Every structure is written in C-alpha cells, then in structure tokens.
Length: 249
Ligand SMILES: Nc1ncnc2c1ncn2[C@@H]1O[C@H](COP(=O)(O)OP(=O)(O)OP(=O)(O)O)[C@@H](O)[C@H]1O
Image 1 (cartoon, rainbow, N blue to C red):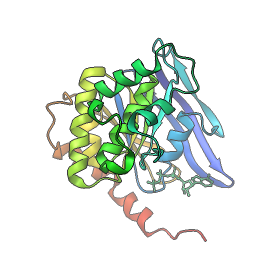
Image 2 (image 1 turned 120 degrees about the horizontal axis):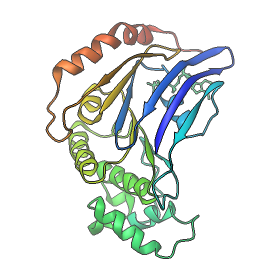
Image 3 (image 1 turned 90 degrees about the horizontal axis):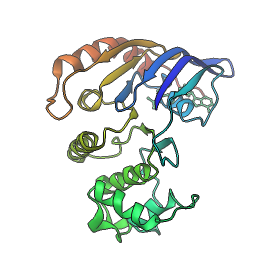
Image 4 (image 1 turned 120 degrees about the vertical axis):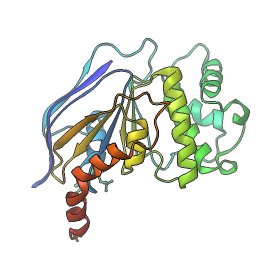
C-alpha cells in the first residue's frame, strides 16, 4: 500500500502549520521528514495516521494493505510507551488484544524472533536498556503487520552509541522485511542513513523545500557527509530563525 498526500494544509486557529504538502510514500521505502523546530513534522505524521484531520487536502491510501494487516498505520513513539507491569511479550500482545486471532502466541513469538528479542520475552521494561525498550516498541508495531510505520523521533531519547546500534538494527530489519515508514527526525545523520527519500520542510508553515532521493543501498551507506551538508544548507537559516523565535505564553 502506498500513501499519497495531496495538497495538505493545516491550521490551528489563525496559525497555519502546514501548507500545500504533496508527497508520495511508496511501499517498501523509508521516507524521512526533516525541518526546523516547530515546522509541523509531528503534525504531518498525526495527519498521515488519521489522528487529526487536515484543514484542507487529504491523505490517500493507494492499494490494499498487506494481507492479514491488523492496523495499516502504526506509530512508534520517542518515549517507547511500554506498560511497565507487562513483560516484553505482554507489551507486544497489547497491540493484538483487540483482535480475534487464532494463534496470538505464535504471532508474538514470530515478531520477537524477527526483531531478535526472543530471549527477552519474559523481561520487564525496567530490566531493559533504552535501546531494548525501543526495540520492543518496534516489535509491537510490527506485530500488527502494518502497511506503514509512522515513526516520530524514535531514536532521540537514546544516547549516541545506542542510536548507532538501533540504526544498524533498522537497516537489518529493512533488508529482511522491506517495511514502509515515515520517519520524523531532527537528526540529519539518521535521515541519510535510513531514508530512501528525505523530505525537507521549511519553517512554519511547513512547506516542502526539497525532496532528496538517496539511491545508495541502506546497508552500504556511510555518513554521506555531502548529502548531510546539502540538507543542512537547505535548513540552516530557517533553523536559526526558528531557534530565535519567541515562545508563545
Ligand atoms: N494541538 C495543537 N494546537 C495548537 N497548536 C499546535 C498543536 N499541535 C502543534 N501545534 C503547533 O504547531 C506547530 C508545529 O508543531 P509540530 O509539533 O508539528 O512541529 P515539529 O516540527 O514536530 O516540532 P519539533 O521539531 O519541535 O518537534 C508548532 O508551532 C506547535 O506549537
């Protein structure tokens, strides 16, 4: 299933947050969204996920979701959002409990194996590092066989080394499963490491400044300094202006 965003504009009261966004999210690709602070990245993700309705324009699902998908659009949040009293398997199970399933336990075991978490099935979140918690959150998202994962700064609560490890994991997972994701990040290194397509938004109201296609295979990518420099060149002045903006209230 592809997603097509058509002429999406959104206002909160008088404030225009997003303006005229046209964007395709092709199946099997990771599309990263970057842009200055407050430009509407998370708002765009909420619109894509249907949590909010845009003031104008639409998000269109093109083609059917994967067979057996329980939830075509599934979020992964920065703060992991795990229930502390449930084990790893119990947290994954949570995503499945609203659905009648013949073999829920099998489905949980399968997704834990796919995300290399089988040995941790009975651990509680408090026993896990931040990186492991986020791996569990990713496993929970995958458990429903989503068409598209909507990832909002998924690595930004983690230290630099753990981020590196998780990026390696995500590359490995993509190589195995070819999942589709919209991935919001502040971090240009993450965007060039994981994105097949990097969408640069302008300062609020967020408009698409440029879409940078990166053809290199995910697995062989280095730091891609030239692409990072290009992205930063597109963003620098606006990031500075956003940084100097007074906060309301
Ligand atoms: N529910 C809301 N009501 C009113 N204003 C909102 C609401 N949600 C977001 N905003 C405003 O919309 C703008 C865009 O916010 P959003 O969180 O989407 O930006 P962002 O690019 O994800 O920001 P950041 O990079 O800081 O995470 C901000 O000015 C924010 O204050």
